[in-house]
Length: 230
Ligand code: URA
Image 1 (cartoon, protein in one colour):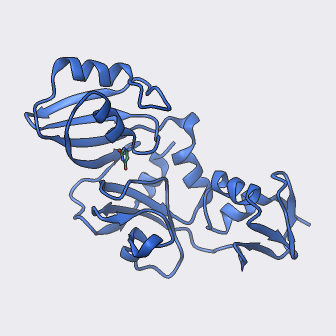
Image 2 (cartoon, rainbow, N blue to C red):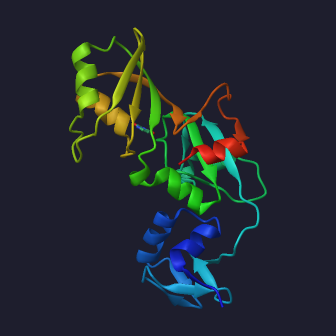
Image 3 (tube, rainbow, N blue to C red):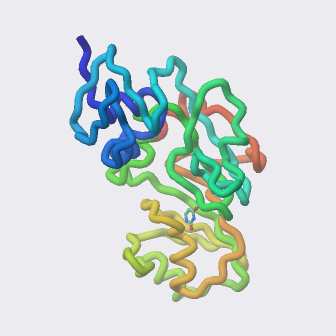
């Protein structure tokens, strides 16, 4: 009889990452054999019937790893809130995948999607400090003092950002590399130092780069790329 922690089981069914599974369990969204389970360490075995949000889940066979160039105007939540377009509408696959982390509605660029909870966990876990590179288009040229502030960390209200790296590309563009993923972090950092941001695009996550992938298009990660996320 193989026993497995409930969060790990949910992640291995391709529903979400392990951390998200913890949230679902704590919110009372998970049932085992008809009973709501809120205990994080609960163990399940193969014969148990597990439901998430009222739907029975089961292990998926094939794991899928996708890189999407997210267009602006799409949300990264799985459910289409208030009729907004979801990135999932752009993915035409037989298996269900979900976005790893988020990009806000008006941000474009590199977004990974998968049904492999362990992989999602690796990409998202703060301890791995995966770097994310964003290309920022501005209305005015960034100043040296703004660069210094962004690099040393700024107070964005509920959080002081960690060290970042800024690389000026042209008069109206710079790249910023961060290792955290607070909500709307780059936008809030720019607001704090009074930079008027016109466009935000993620161009790199870990060692994975967007390259020439067209907006709205996606591709599978290569074996090599899958192993690059550590
Ligand atoms: N920073 C933002 O402001 N938005 C994103 O989507 C990601 C990082």
